[in-house]
Length: 308
Image (tube, rainbow, N blue to C red; front, side, top):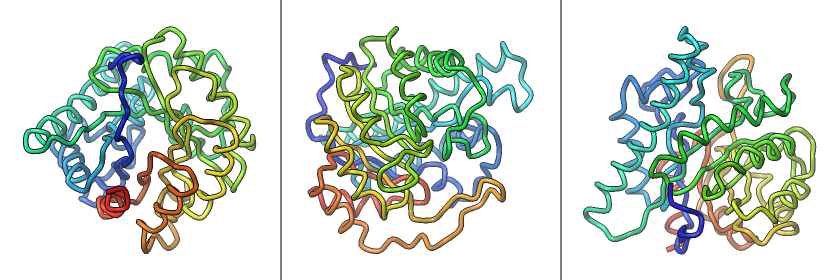
């Protein structure tokens, strides 16, 4: 991984969009403990195609298809612990390799710089029950640290540029991630939270409080919000701006809501003038902007046009 002291983020503004939901649009059934990670094994070319589409749309940064990769997830589909750990490590490496391939092929015809962020979801994503949207886990702090440490150790040896800890629901999990990062001081990461309203993360702590925790941490290169309703983003940027001078990261979902019990999306996901919204978020202080669940290349294209 690019050492923290050598990491140059000049020019990074446009993140990509939803990967798993884009795969679903292309006909893949992701209803399982591994979510999009299962496509890493079954159809890696499909993941590569989505990465390519986001680069063509103007993304500066590709997030890998590793959000829900974990040894626990591979155990849930029938692997013994040893094989599950091996499979998880292999999937993490493959996710970065696919992003690398997409970047290399794209840069063969353009000098535009592209970054790779190795995506890591929260402990709740591994539970596969929507817990990333409330953070009420039945586990110890040490278990949280261990969960994140195992995946960090694998990705630290890849050629990703930095880590992206996504959909964090609580201050406690952010603290666990910081503890896990301590054994890899050269690894850079951004942390992005899910939020339930315009001031609070999903578990109930103030986003401003969480940002204050992260602001003095040298390994943290950005603080943000993802997989949250677009209507809340403006207020949440304000919360972040009061607490940090680090880059503010925002990539909301489409506006639709995930029903964890029925395992489906509901609501109106037609976000009109996404570029205009991105312009408002930029004016409010966001530096890295993209899309999360149910957004696609068309949203990223609108964001890229706003920046360029």
